[in-house]
Length: 223
Image (cartoon, rainbow, N blue to C red; front, side, top):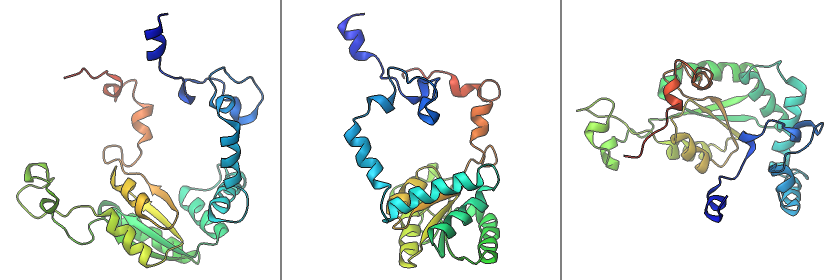
């Protein structure tokens, strides 16, 4: 192999591993393993974040405790409630897609039944037309009329004003969820990940990529 070939070799990562010794340490780490090749000082700095009593440490331990206590026993809805209570969160913010508002309404009833307060903000809050941020009419879903822009930064801002303890994403679009997470002051978790095609089950495309969604594995050619 030439020097040029070596320089262009893609670094191996966890998706190329077939051992996963990092999980239980019952086998041997592969040579490229990120666990053994990571700077140990950096690793220790990260582990230090999980110690103590600040929010990062409490979230890390609470998440691990929920996993240990309820693995395979609770639904995602129940896990969020258990996580919130164990973390000490009392007011739950919900950043919801308009397309999943009915699911949000059910979720708020469940939270109330479990003794938790909630406050929801719809993605279309502000009713700002897409044209106001230079989205041309031909790129609207419904052309020739007012179509409100999804407004994740405003959703986060309003939930920040409510001083929520934990925010839950319910079906925000790809990218809008990124902005919401960036601007949310409270920790964020997800109830539903939007996938309009698969009924909000994005893993379905991966499970069927060998047949129904085989287009996913077709290589794109440079245009």
